[in-house]
Amino acid sequence: MGRRVETTSLGSFALVLHSHIPYVLAHGRWPHGMDWLSEVTAETYLPLLNVLNRLVEEGISPKITLGLTPVLLEQLADPEFAGEFEAYLGEKADAARANAAEFRRMARPDMAALAEHWHRWYSGLAADYTSTYGRDIIGAFKRLLDAGHIEILTSAATHGYLPLLGTDASVRAQVRQGVTSYRRHFGTDPRGFWLPECAFRPRYPWSPPVGPSGKPIERMGVDEALSAEGIEYFFVDAHLLKGGRSVGVYADRFKPLEALWSRFERQWEPDKQERSTFLPYLVSSNPGVVAPVAIFARDQETGIQVWSGDVGYPGDEWYLEFHRKHYPGNLRYWRVSWPRQDLAVKELYEPIKALSRLPGHASHFAEVVRDALAQHHATAGEPGILTSMYDTELFGHWWHEGAEWLYYAIRALAEQTDINRVTCGEYLDANRPTTVVSLPEGSWGEGGYHWIWLNEWTSWTWQRIYECEAEMIRLADDLGDNPVVETLLRQAARELLLLESSDWQFCISTWAARDYAEQRVRYHADKFEAIALLARRAAAGDNIDPEDWNALGEAEDRDRCFPDIDPAWWRTPE
Image (tube, rainbow, N blue to C red; front, side):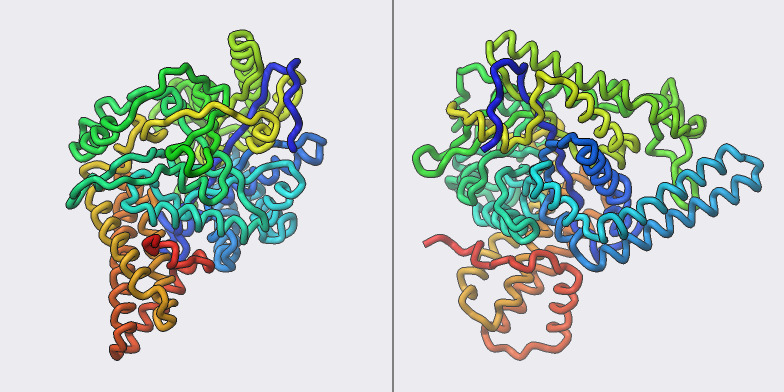
């Protein structure tokens, strides 16, 4: 059991970080592919481990709730990643050394000194990876988990956008694979679950927003899939808890999206009760049939302090500028600068000056947390919990100094003796919610609904997903007991999970690696369809050409995640 919150405290604080990179092993290197994973590991995951262990050594338990998506874990555990990552760090260190020589020839000793700084930085990361952590990042996080310093969440297998998946079987499979992978990597059951994009859909009659719609069928709520796998809690954005309609013009941008909302709205009756983001609640789309699941809501005030490059800490003029890089090597040598200047006239980065800004920003954050908890305590007459939620990759990757900021922020919060720093599981152990609420459909994306993932640019991806989902169910029903095609069904299931990754629609809609994302959708859909056809031919006893079996082997080698996947997850329930 966790420690009970004392009534003399102002309340509790939970820092929740969500870590995710789509499956990029054997799918390119630069600018999109393996370097994406290596870059984030170097700039975020290793620095975060260093910060957490430094806090523990200083006698401060970090108490963060850390999400690591199953598909990220699969990649970090893959032997190929270790070699790729070490090579990446070596290339960056070499590039810094070459830049230093170049800058000295240009009579720029200031830039040469900064290049030497990056050489030491990447060389130090290489030593951390090989010596400190033994090339085992997951093991390093597991040690912190086992010691009670952090709590680790699971998530949907490939970060599938659960509300838009076409079948309950697909939602269940994403959740089950997430739980199964967690057990394999950490040797225990997960308690909490990060919904990809905090996207939720309750139970109601649903039909696909693209393609032949047909008569709406009753679909289970996302919470039901979590409850069935023993998940105790998940997270939502504040507007979902408060029940407001926040789709606004975003639904109007795309008629299928508007139709989807209209079907939901006809079924949903919002609760009249007042809700607070400082309290956990229970959610049950199917009361009396499945156990309710607890929810924590995202705090918006602390969120904007850290998320925003305009009004938050990352926009400070002394921090490293993310967007300007020096070629060759792609290293960064400039700071944000002030006022907002064009990239071409950014001023030179000064690491010591940047680091000197962190304690002040961390202290300010601790005061924001304290003031918010104090205000809730004064209004409600009892302590609550403030849940700050962020993408982990913000800290170190997008905001270079962010990982080090976490160190100072946790220290500053530890000095606030009337604030309890807790993991979400610890808080629930001491403060079980009893109020059951209903949640609307939505996400933490732009407009609070599905627009980023479902729009005129991405509708074709959903049509292909829905076709493959339907065929996967037919395969599981028709061939699931046939040992001849077991390997084929398992690989088809992997390709389907990878096809369902929400990253592809996000990259298409935001124009971030759009061509790469479209290519990946087509690749996984084509591969699934080819393997499905091969399975049916093999089951029928057809003579299979060696080239076809070689194509299966290539798919197994390239998309080799989830060794414990089970095609039976897609069977139609009896």
